[in-house]
Length: 368
Ligand SMILES: NC(=O)c1ccc[n+]([C@@H]2O[C@H](COP(=O)([O-])OP(=O)(O)OC[C@H]3O[C@@H](n4cnc5c(N)ncnc54)[C@H](OP(=O)(O)O)[C@@H]3O)[C@@H](O)[C@H]2O)c1
Image (cartoon, protein in one colour):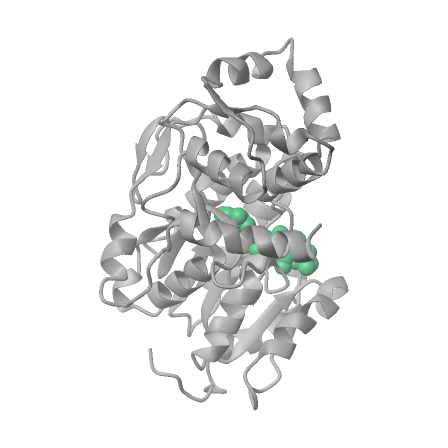
């Protein structure tokens, strides 16, 4: 897309711009010439500073819409809502309560009710050309087999409130597709920038980086034999944030993306085995690797009897216990729509083995 000067008459409303992905999406939109309106909770306004500092030179200061997904009418008063009606041409809804261990109530309030409120706002905006909804691969829950971009409710179950809430939110969003111009994006487990390693928070594989790098500092441990998973059919669906952002903003710019769902995921994800082996080696573990099937053990850890101990052990190792369950998922995600939308756009998901050392280097330098 051609870079152009922001058109003050038209603006894109971005929710979640203080967050990990939202900040980068807002920046990419600004770089592509969009005028930004940033939806932000009053107490979080200062968290927009890193984004504001990164905006291109001469870019007009983004307007801030003080609002909260958890409040009636999003906490936006009628006159402010009318003003939005005159300006907003697109909404990028990324804000969510994103934490695997969170309560059902918190997840429903922000992710489900909050998304409904965003849909109500969208329905009130006469100039709206698109509502972009950032969902997640977690909507597939415990589905076993291929999950396609057009799939949603296949009778899957959910291990945590986050996945269930995003599934319900996406269900509402899709329910409005015949009334509103909607596009849905489902990223995988988003990791740092593949070019710089930059990452904002401990999440997904970073729990493992943290645990292993602590262990590697114990005398002799890096030379100890380590168990690695034998299973070859359990994939770790990580995807670097730079790819997610570029792909999302490019697809968003296409007329043909209206009514579509896109998996923003690595079409060739590593297995947990490959990921773990490569991480051990990048963190300097050079002892013998013993390959063992670990699914049976994980199943045992998940039973009612062992779950409280599993939770306690995970908590003391700094891991969300819910992550353990992911190892049992045997799901693959097709990326047909994404591949076809990005054809000839030179936006390609890099292979994990190429960028893993960059992620680990950044982690060691900045996050320990
Ligand atoms: N990170 C991943 O691996 C991943 C993977 C798949 C999908 N996703 C989806 O991508 C989106 C962004 O994720 P992220 O990792 O960037 O999340 P994040 O870093 O945790 O950021 C969450 C954002 O949501 C905002 N927010 C939370 N509750 C809010 C409320 N009640 N009202 C208004 N804003 C609220 C936060 O604002 P405050 O500054 O006020 O807290 C923050 O800007 C989410 O929809 C998530 O489900 C993420």
